[in-house]
Image 1 (tube, rainbow, N blue to C red):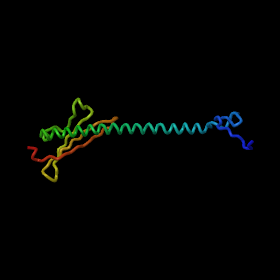
Image 2 (image 1 turned 120 degrees about the vertical axis):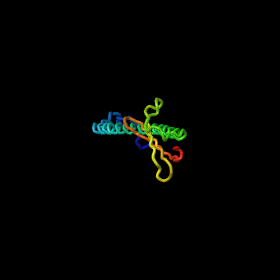
Image 3 (image 1 turned 135 degrees about the vertical axis):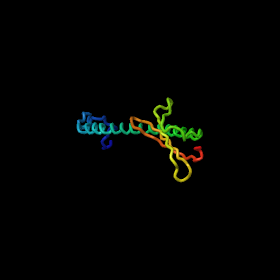
Image 4 (image 1 turned 60 degrees about the vertical axis):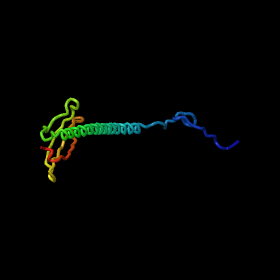
Length: 143
């Protein structure tokens, strides 16, 4: 026979090698409180981060729509040659009620051109955002 002690393959958690309950296993009250405090601090921060990411996604989606609306508005003004006589503010009707536009016409200082700018405004969670789209047209298109 061998003189080595036989070692059991595993022990049950909380049970000593002799089969008696081990009072030293488990968590202390201080460890439990520390874990609860950690969770209480991490969960609100994580939820706030998720809310910020969600808002950023919504803003990005609305900006894409706003740029498309501004581009369509400018294209129509230039193609119809109605930009010199259009109003300076408005909305996009019932199809896009949460978006409104502002039209700005300025003289381009370097050539005989006009700079046309459309600003499209929209709200996300009670904050107002906007996109700005500009283009140049020849002065001769005004007549």
